[in-house]
Image 1 (tube, rainbow, N blue to C red):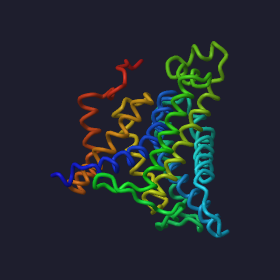
Image 2 (image 1 turned 60 degrees about the vertical axis):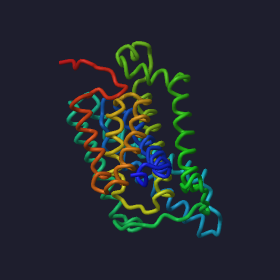
Image 3 (image 1 turned 45 degrees about the horizontal axis):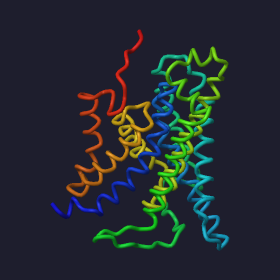
Length: 300
């Protein structure tokens, strides 16, 4: 039992939770404003990983040392662009249609991105090994092994979450995002362009998913066009656990899922793979509003 509950698993849990948190934030931001569960969000993460892969390979082909910051910015830009286009092309025309229409469309966008990517000759359906963008270094702490990849992973994720928190709490656009999640009609009466706020929300969520794609690539160095399905679903579970629509709750839920999954795998691979879904069922039965969510009545 001591081999299961050790410091190494804590390190692995924080690393995994960081990736889930970046994806979960996008789910909760979009849902908080437009009440849309964007099931294509995991595919923004996948595209971020692929763009990071091709950028790194291009720099390596020129015999340059890949620059993680440049790759990160390109991955985030790709995720932001795809999210923006998805909103404008697929979701915006359905803004005031029944929610089921938008939900089905989100599934369609997800499948479109996955199968289009796998059909492209320069991507293909097969796994690709992610290149080493940094020379691996290991640090031994109390019997646990901490790599520089894990440090970079957590540092980037935490930095992005801190920046996002600042934007939401202390900027005008963040104030508009919070206001739009509470009362869209009042926001329109104040002269705020709601569609611009929604565009910005998709851009923020997509950029964070793109960053998560890079972090997943360097940490778990194998990518494929369907890599966003399971992490995207588990990040959605994290958002529900934390209270979907609550950014802090999404972060908290992501780290809880990361810990539960890592320690579950340490016990048994079947437990590790299924524990997130078990948590979802328990939350929906006993705490449907999530840990930090608020109980709301549905208007009919």
